[in-house]
Length: 505
Image (cartoon, rainbow, N blue to C red; front, side, top):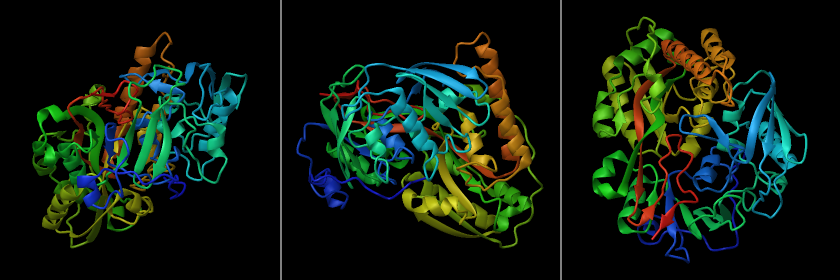
C-alpha cells in the first residue's frame, strides 16, 4: 500500500532499452554501457521505491536492500544483518547485529539505525501488511544490540523481520517526506540513479559479504509482457521476470528457468457489500467456476490445478482439511463487477473465461482491467464484487500465518475480500498461539513446526468455507535468462532474482 506516488529522478538522462523497447514508448534513450546486464522487471514503482510499499520487492530482487533476518529453503530464519535473535519474553526479542556493515552512504549500521528503520515502518502512513496490527516497536540496547517488541506474543517475529518491507536503510533515507533508498541501503549493489523508466546499479565495493561478481547492471521497468519477451529474444534484455505462459513457445528451452512457487491465483469475493455479501450467491459463484480451461489452456501446463490456498511448492500443505460450502442460490441475473490487472498477462485472459462461466450460470457480468498500481486502491476499497489476483502466500514473511492474518481477518491490512468472520479470526489466531520456536534452536522445533502447520491447514479450511476466496491455479515461476548469464535465482518466495553471484559473460 503506497505512501506516495513520488518517483526518484536524478539529473542523468532517462534510462532505457533501445530498439524493441524504445519503439513501444517505454523508454526515452539507451543506457551508456551496452555490455552490462539488463534486467527487465514486470512491475513499476508505486511509491518512489519506498520499502514500506510493495516496491520493497524491487529493492530485494535487485540485491540493493537487506533485512535483519533471512530465510532458508524451509522458511526458517537465517542470519543476515542480525547474527542471532533470542526470545527474552512473550512479547520481546533481543537481536545482535553484524559488525562492520556500512550503508551505501558510508555511515555505519548500528542498533540505533536498525531500530529507527523498524520504527519508521511501524509508524508509516500505510503500515506494511507484514506488521500491520502487530504493534512492533524497536529500541537500541547497545551499540549492536536491539530489542524488538510486539503488542501480543508473536512466535514468528524473526520470519517477519525477513520481509523486504522491513529492509534496513540509513537514517538519511527517512529525513524527507518519503523514504528514499537511493544510496542508503546495505546490499551488494548500490542504487545510484533512478528515473521513471528504470534504475542503474553499481557494485558495492564496501559490502560486508562477498562482493558482487558484476561491476553493475541496469534494471528497466517493462510492465508489458510481450515487450519483455521481445527484448530477451533480441538481446536487448538479458533477464526478464514473469514470462507469459502463452509466449513460452517463443523462447528457447535454454532461455527458461521454471520453478515451483508459493503463488496462487484466486478470485477474491467481496463479502461486505454488493450481491456477494450473500454467502449463498458466493457459493453459486464457486459452483459456476471451472478452473480446468485456465490451468490447461491459458497456463499451458505451467500451473497446477487448485487444491486449496497453498500449492505444491509447500509440500507440507498437501494434507488439506475438508470443508463444506453454504448452500448455493440460483442466480437471477445479479450483476457482478469483476476486475483484475494487466501486469500478469494471464490474468485478463483468465478473467474472460471466468466471466463467461458466470454468465452461463445466470449472472450478468461487467469486467475491468487496469495496471496494478492504478487499480489497487479501488481493489482495497471494495469497489469490485470479485477481484482476480495472483498472490504469493509466503512472500511477506515466509510463514503462511501472516498471509492468512493480513488477507482474511477482520483487522487484516490486505483484506481484499473484506471478510469479517469470527470463526476465521479465531482459527487464524490459533496459528499465532501455536507453540513454535521461531528461532529454530529449541529442543522441540520439529513438533512445534508440525503444530503450526496443522493449525494453518485448519484455518485454511475455515477460510475456504466462507467462499471469500476461490483458488483458481497454483502458478510456476518462469524467468527468462539469456545465454551467458548465470546464477539468476528462481526463488519460490520471489524475493531474489539478481544476487551478488549473478554473472554475465
